[in-house]
Length: 121
Length: 110
Image 1 (cartoon, one colour):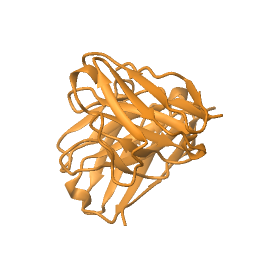
Image 2 (image 1 turned 180 degrees about the horizontal axis):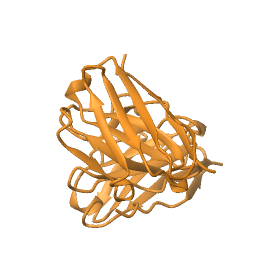
Image 3 (image 1 turned 90 degrees about the vertical axis):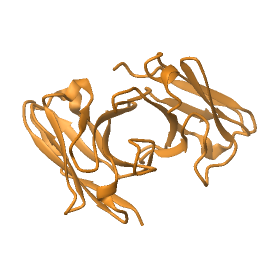
Image 4 (image 1 turned 180 degrees about the vertical axis):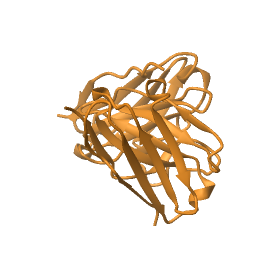
């Protein structure tokens, strides 16, 4: 059974840092692009970043470029999101997601349960 | 990277049909046949309902259908059921390995 389990969310002050993790199981993690999607309270979904199977290519939404870094450890079946210089507008539930097919970046048939990041003083 | 435009809310009575629109540009919705739709219940993770504009994953009822015309994609739900009451999000490939979501639409079954 495919499972994605996020962790690492919490309350952080503006300007602070947080590292999110996503533990994957039930599939060949190293064979898939992986993605972070976030959802601010009461708002729609927002694509944040994705990473190629071997980590050689990474793409970000403009609003997080230079502040967030997506990475992965295929030996540990884990996806990460290092978030620095956090702002109030980064407050959201962060989901990791896996695409339907290994060769594509989307659509997503598996999602984690999400981890809440709150940026507030 | 502006979000795709969806109506904030739509509603319909059981048995009726509703259509949710998703408007983008020629750089995203209009430029690729890679539009997907997700259903999301409050506090839950999204569920894939439609992909590649009009394809349904196995297990999704054929009451759900997708289409696209120009820069606007649409999700139609026919034979509305109470369980269809949820938020619906569209998503489009936007080139250079990036994705754009819409703002989400709340469907109310009257």
